[in-house]
Length: 230
Image (cartoon, rainbow, N blue to C red):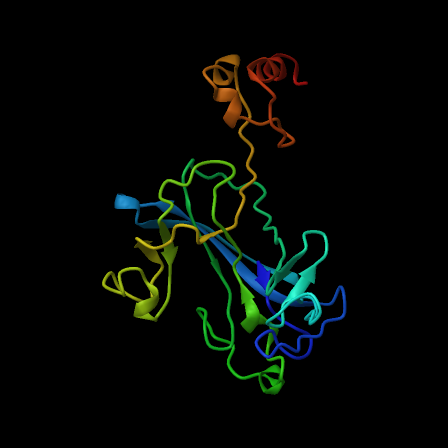
């Protein structure tokens, strides 16, 4: 996730102030679907909602940065948002090789059930979940993204779809043509244990794992695990 929320002040007013380590909590849902015909959204496999502790972004650094951004000394870079990983527990879930996933959460005015006006709505910093975004990653580092210029998206605003809503609004659907470089940053850690030595061959070892989730170094390492469990 990418948190732009401040404990006081705001990122857009350049007066963000946050106590280091401060967090807020918010429920977030992961939906996983089968892939339907023509890459449409198929049947729901599972829906998991967990409440996560999300960090506020650091205070604005008016010395090293402009525009109210915060400064990351380790990279010498200024940022608006603060990246924070969240982890869903899907223990025991069996999924096919290809799935469609969606991240959903409610804010004041958006989501499946908008929260509406709350006491934080009247503060200068606003409600922190209104400044929470899904982080993006431009390049796939592990696995394969079958369609890098498409995404699955649900909004009531027609102009936010690549096709300007021609394919419908207000439903989670395939949206193609304008998503290159703007794909959600996500990783699925799955177990794919080889049942026999043949499954290690012909580069099969590259997609297999041990029971603890660790990867194999090469084909021989995979075959040894099948034979000895080590």
